[in-house]
Image 1: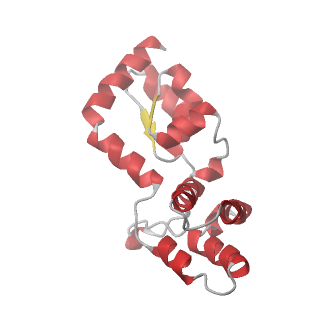
Image 2 (image 1 turned 90 degrees about the vertical axis):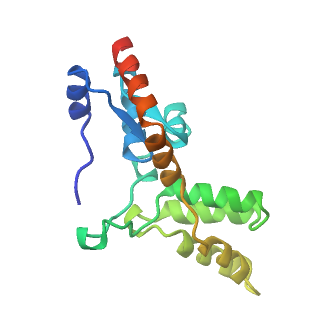
Length: 172
């Protein structure tokens, strides 16, 4: 229920020689939009936006719970769904057709209602009417999503990235 950071806010910071790094979520999207102005993008999600592989804002959007819940994500980001389904397909957990159907099912849902498990259940209950539980169990295992991995990476390299962001802003 809160707007994301505006382009003008980032441009203002950059004009004041503040290094700005975007990764993981809306930061990755904003970095892809503003890297020509000196914003530094980082991570796989940024690379996907910068290359044009991703273009929609809803790829990273999630709905969050209130502060009392620690702002916990209550929906799944499309980039995390794509990553999990790609991993499952590579591991033989789902077929290529099932993977495409799961991604299509998730993409068709509004970001506030996106759930990896709901899309998996919807698709596999039709394609594997006999016993979809093994695959559903695989998707239900706790693992970090791509957004979390990109965020962790940027924080682990923060000193280095601040220097890169300063250089990037000077060149812009």
